[in-house]
Amino acid sequence: MDETLKSALIQTVIETARTAYPDMQQAIKYGGTVFMTQSDKLVGGVYAYTNYVSVGFSNGASFDDPKRLLEGKGKARRHVKLHSLTDIVDMNVTGFLKQAFA
Image (tube, rainbow, N blue to C red):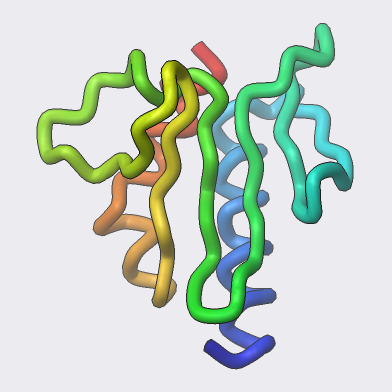
């Protein structure tokens, strides 16, 4: 994946998170951009890898995910992998971000 696409994906995810939760706080941690509530509760983040961009959710295991889009097997954390801008819609990033900030 080229760097231009990675940057576009990351920026779009950050904008989507801000739309889902206008009071969102963000910081650079763990090699990516993390999303937090106003009370500094970490709810997720976006991270660039060689072949995809990952959007992780701290409590994703508890999310409503009828299409089983979320990946991961930990007790709480789940993520989706993005390979194109259309994946933001196809992988329900907006819906998952809304659940993350609820």
